[in-house]
Image 1 (tube, rainbow, N blue to C red):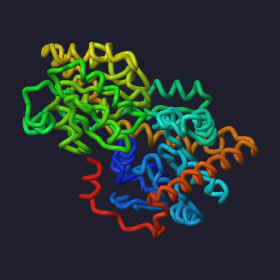
Image 2: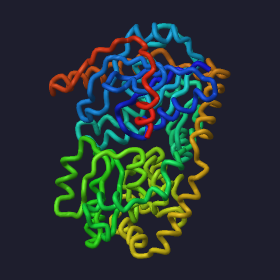
Image 3: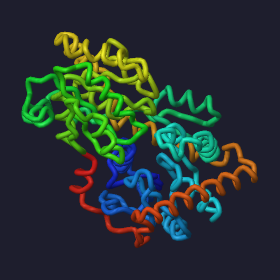
Image 4: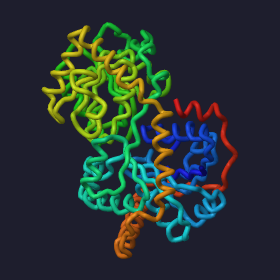
Length: 432
């Protein structure tokens, strides 16, 4: 197959969605597939072994790491030359929806798959200026996703939730993890020293998260204060870091910044417990990675996480926003070495079969299904399509004007040419 992937977020950004996209790029050519990536332009976005079309972009005002691309006619020309059998919109929102509008208007009718990874309609509730837009964003996402021949999402819980909200043709893209990279044998005294600031005998809690309001990391400050004999290592970065540093002031917490590859795996394997606070995960990639490293995870019973964690077997689930309940299960792990080992061993066993080869195989099956069912998607009424397009254009214009007022980087120029493939070494580094 010839597959064009339109990726809402891409390199050099670090998150679970980008990781999934990179694994698509790694696995699909093994089946003989040819790929083209379409993404917002940013330094390093072409560091992968397949052709990339990068379009001009600007930084989202409230989250500068997220760049919004601005597609135009040159996008259409690039795709016409490539002649894809199927289009995969990965995590589409402002950029993906605009691409869809441009391509539909051009008459380029290609079977499409949309994959849903981010609860944008819930995430905006963490930003005061955007909170009133939640219902609008849910409507907008449903309008665009229901244009697809097949929709994908990454947990059974989220699949049911999307169907309940009126999304159509929703299939499962199974969770996966690199269980060779993320492995208990990555445990390291040197990493433990680093995470505990040279106090390896101290009980060590770990969380890995983007530092943004919707991730609820500040909740862990209240949990940590119930453990005077423990410290917390916070791996990740993001726009809320300065606020979180103030929130954790006086607590025994250390902000590590981003880790990746073997260093990230070592951090998971070297901690006594993995604690997590986000309640809006469609799946919970970092929870899966911690489990693969034999980590005992304590996470909220929310979002797609209960599809990964079996309470009191492969980890513990606490009542969302309940500090006492989260502390209770964390204390169980920290105070009982036998329990911690049992949970970690069971967690590792539970995820060993969740491999990328099998997961991407399901995605390929969805591509073939989309090709077979092309045109069967229920047509949206003309007024509904027009209203969705106007809404998306208005949002993008609003975001761009705000970025310009705040003097954020805007409208990076794109070559619009498909560059030669970047080195395998650069791609391997990004994937890890």
